[in-house]
Image 1 (cartoon, one colour):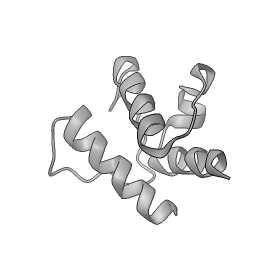
Image 2 (cartoon, one colour):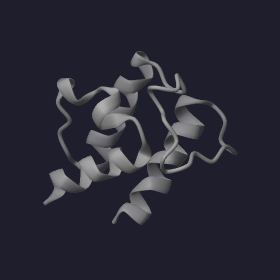
Image 3 (tube, helix red, strand yellow):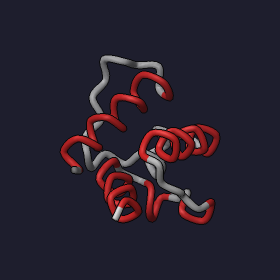
Image 4 (cartoon, one colour):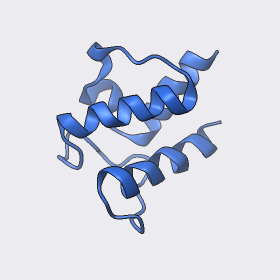
Length: 82
């Protein structure tokens, strides 16, 4: 499932958050720790993930330890869908 989640979330980030629809975000590219997305954008990403994939993300999980790469984000979604 990650092979579909990662490009889908990456596409959303590039077009809606970064406003760079042609940008490709690598699965292991740091999002938060690199400053690519900020804390305000993080909330938008969390809401998108919750609405799109029907999972709940706790506020305490919105940090670089659990939410810093597309791979981590996809793994979090997959763990909640089981």
